[in-house]
Image (cartoon, rainbow, N blue to C red; front, side, top):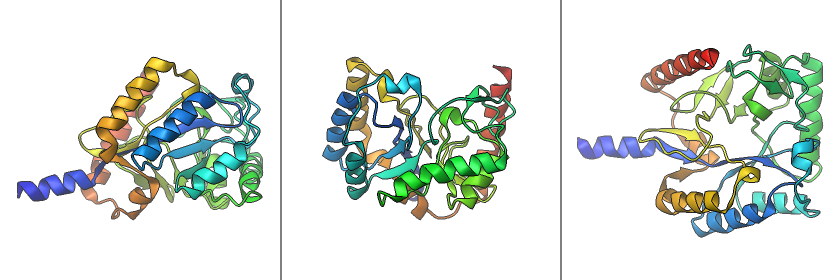
Length: 254
């Protein structure tokens, strides 16, 4: 009995490595170090690529003129390429009325449907012309509204790497992969994604990350693993519902 429980628990426990703000301009020293680390353990992270980066905060980092060649190479290695917004410019503000009650500035929230659809299609075109497959999305600063989700679905994207929950869940005809923490934390049960911003790292942070990966590499999962899991059962849906309601309530109190 205990072996069966342990087997089930192991199957539904893991961490998806989600890397944010992957663009021509970023901290390439740490990107190169992470790539070597991931290759060492055969880890296939999910890279949130900004297709047309115009964020002045990100443009100050070194530019890699062979960026898109790197992206193609990452996908050829089995890494998941996801779309992280279109240009990463915050022109809107949600006041915690967004899908996750997150609040703050947004690239998408509040724009009408046609504007959001155009942004997503323009971004996807950058990948398509380089024959890069994209099947998932996450918005800058975690801020979405119903038009964002509809625009994603109408563009063929039905996977969002964001949300609250211990397990991936389906809502609005979209599969959400929860993203709960701002750093790498492996819970004893459940499957979520982490959030990594290389541009904010220093050498000490990388060493801590390296130690975490060396210790927990066997619990790092990729998107295909998550998609191949059986559909969520009643227990997982119940847990996710409770976690989502609790975290959204806490967000409103910030």
